[in-house]
Image 1 (cartoon, one colour):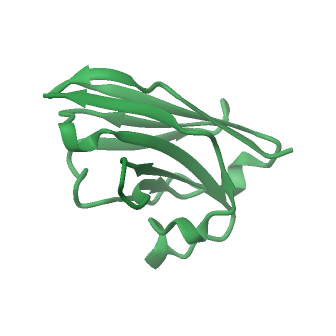
Image 2 (cartoon, rainbow, N blue to C red; image 1 turned 90 degrees about the horizontal axis):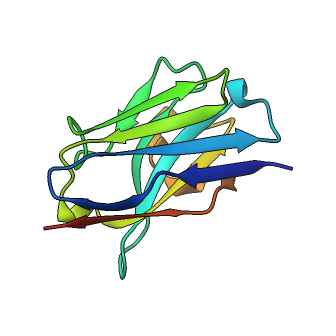
Length: 126
């Protein structure tokens, strides 16, 4: 059974940092692109970042470039999202997702991903 478990969310003040983790099981982790998405209340889900199966390619939404860093540890089957300089507008439920075939030009499109984990809440206070 494919499972993705996101964790690491919480409440933090603006300017602070959090590190999200996405632990995966049930499939060959090394073959999958992993993405992070978020959804704020009343807004559509948006792509935040993703990392290719090899780890050589990473993608970021313009809104998080320079503040967020994605990485993966294939031995631990975990993808991390280090979030620095957090802003109130980063407040959302964050989800991780996985798929084998993710077209690079659509790397941050949720329609590219078949497998999803439950979300973890990130709240940034001003």
